[in-house]
Image (cartoon, rainbow, N blue to C red; front, top):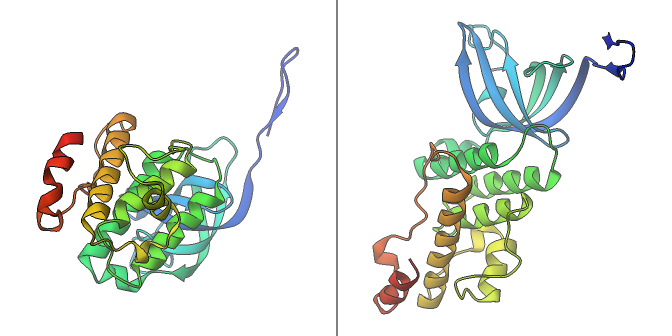
Length: 242
């Protein structure tokens, strides 16, 4: 469609159909048979989409509209419309082990909500897409350690431009580097000094989320260590920086 008036710059609004890989961050039933989803795609960033008729008995796209499903989506985007429409798709991964574990599912939903809340619409970032895909892939293999959520949050902060160039709260550079670079499944800490550093990383995440989110997360994952995991010799030090 062409919009033009004399003396005003001409602009064009195009309808387009494209295919992209994406991960479902959130879904909500809409009207009688439709669903709305927030999808983080590899090439187009976060987009909001409608899946018409998916809740009917013969709906064919239900599997690719479930939370943290990873699929290839065929999307119709009408020029100027806020919502695109999913017209087809092919499932890549549904992460079945996550869906059978409440602990893994809670962390997966938490990671997806962080992606939805901390990423702008239609601003692609392959780094963020791959970060979420890595997190879900590792969650599908093994139960998460207490370091999983803060490590994901710190990495998403860095990818979103909110990361810290240097460690704070006297966290050692080595520990800071591990939280940002090591595989999530390898972040298992038992030494008192490591548990103290992990608690400090939790505090960094809490401060960041309190500052930048207008309202609390729905999938609230407390950034705290279980009391039995905190060595008694470190308790006073932990209280000192809270």
